[in-house]
Length: 176
Image 1: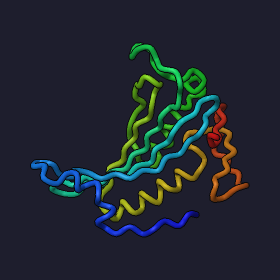
Image 2: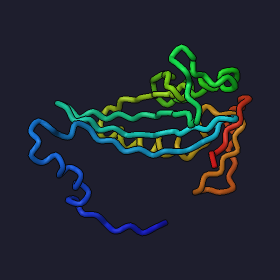
Image 3: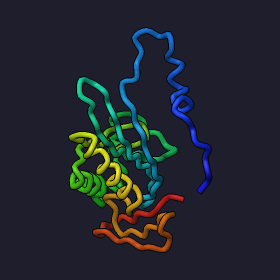
Image 4: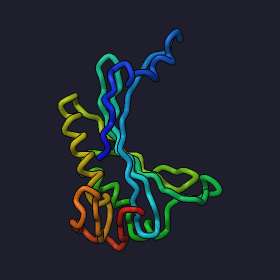
């Protein structure tokens, strides 16, 4: 672990100074995220685990999990469905949706030029549930990749541990 110098509050909020003198501009939300690169069969993905704080009359707390395909190819048009054939055949997209629903996340697979990406959200009741949800997101981030099949996962924190969730025909492993 690398030691980092402690920042004081004014240093951390330095980027807000650019808003000084701009009438009508204000901070409307804040978000933090952790990313993870994973491989699913022959595909590579980036999983983003994100916490959103949205000020309004009553502060809203939300979390999201977004699954982005990492690809060097671009789909020609929106008419191309964007589903990876191996993953569609193995019903991997449905398995991910089910697993996220089990944790309270609702969403769907959306079209993008790089292929379908998963966009799943959860609205929290308040600050107390936010702390619990952050711990859940961190456990999900460190666990074998959701919706996966025969998994051999070696997290950097616990090298050598093997985890095997319910099997599918698609192998999931951390991306290198």
